[in-house]
Amino acid sequence: MSEGIIAVQATAPRYLKGAVDNTIRNRLWLAMLKKHNRIKTGDHGAVSLTWDVEFSEPEIRQNGDAGQQVFTEHDAYRQLTIDVRGYVGTDRLTLKKKLMNDSPLAIVNLYDRKLPKLIKSMTNNFGNELYIDGYATGNGNRLIGMESFLGDDGNTVAADLVANPSDTYADRSTALAALGGTWSSGLGSGNYPNATIATDWPYGQGTSEYDYIAPKLINYTSSSWPTGSILWRDNCSAVMRRARTWCKSVGGEGRAPYCHMLSPELYDAFEDYQEDKFRTVVPHKSSQDLGFEDTLNFNGAAVKHEFDVPAGVGYGLNLNEMLLSSIHDDFFYSFGPEWDTKSLSYLYLVGFFGNIRFSSPKHFAKYAAYA
Image (cartoon, rainbow, N blue to C red; front, side, top):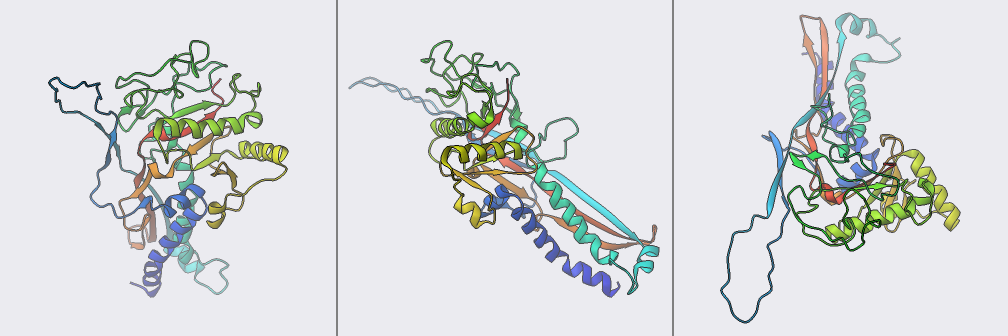
């Protein structure tokens, strides 16, 4: 083995560490996940990621002074399971090119740059994968990202404040009442947040079975917003306030979005709204401490844009309900340069095996023009 190969292989762990650091630093919610210890590596032997969700509470009955009690075992949990997904990037350098490039006249040392370039490509592409639908056709080995549980029934009308959840995540339906349960209907017909759902949800009260993994799909173009407008710029404040109220109301303390992640054009419109209303914009201190200067504060939550967010879409993220897991010790793994006699080439490979877990979709929100 040549000294060059030894040198490149010896520095590979340093490249990998730097790559993970760069990936995290360039994406706010990855940086937040690291800060909150929600990134896990070295999950060896994992063939799937499985966790329990408490979907039901024991029944509480009225009771007088006397009477015989009935004892039954309560089934409170349902298991959610996702598989291990993976990515790989490969490159090679032929012996001929290496020898031609091995000169003081070489502008770029191809041999030394192959591995870091592969890692850079992996980091640049990884951010987009956090948002994709891992169950969509052709995505069988991609991350099971945010859009994997944010499907709706397609029946939203202009007056609806929310869309009706209708998707399957981790082998479980996100539909309301998929496991039974009941919800209040005190608002009355014509005042329900969604006419098809025809209950007060996500306002009101009900049993935990009713919406145990149902996300909040908020229709920011609804004609029912107090502004009377169907524009995000006019409704953004009300939309994000409702996301906070609804996630916290049905999920409990600590379930409100910690970050509102917006597409760039929605972020610009929100910033314009803030400037028009308050004549100043307030930065989000903890995001600034992580190096994200252009992050705004809205009722204590961070508001940020990312290149990878689909156009016209925003997300309400709850960091405590997320876990990014790698089954390799270094998050990304690498091999090479390895000499291949058959092709007279040096081979390079960088990859990832793992997935991202959203403990319960009910603690997340999506903002979109549903109708």
